[in-house]
Image (cartoon, rainbow, N blue to C red; front, side, top):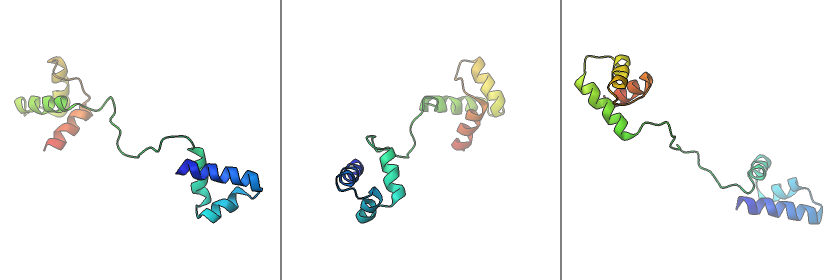
Length: 105
């Protein structure tokens, strides 16, 4: 729909020599919206939701952190991080360990 409106305005403003701004007003589309559409012409309409990233923790990593904390409940999150590295449990940052443990509570 977006690309069709841009095509329509371009085609008819060239044929009739009426400004694109006038067509935009007649269509009831704001100028800023039309020019945003024109910049995004030909692109897929993208959503603004969360996109999974490569560096996000996997569920098994979160479970491993929580399980390791259960075996070592008296250790702080920073010490747990380096203990897990030493025991080849999981390799994550101290901030990630803190977030997982904080969310688990």
